[in-house]
Length: 80
Ligand SMILES: [Zn+2]
Image (cartoon, rainbow, N blue to C red; front, side):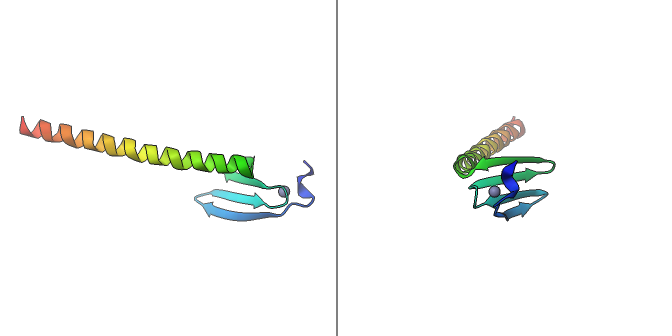
């Protein structure tokens, strides 16, 4: 990779063994999750970021629905 020349990589986030770097020179975001790393141009990274947020919202709704369902069946189980 001709990456090392002119790279301006800075760490922009870090948590639980995951790190995110951004290279201003190449307009690339790099996700490091354990031994895996994923490099995306900044537009693709924005799309992925939006998808992750959307999936989190849907997961929250699914969990909420499941909890309501569980609670309903728990109450029905009690009253009968
Ligand atoms: Zn770079």
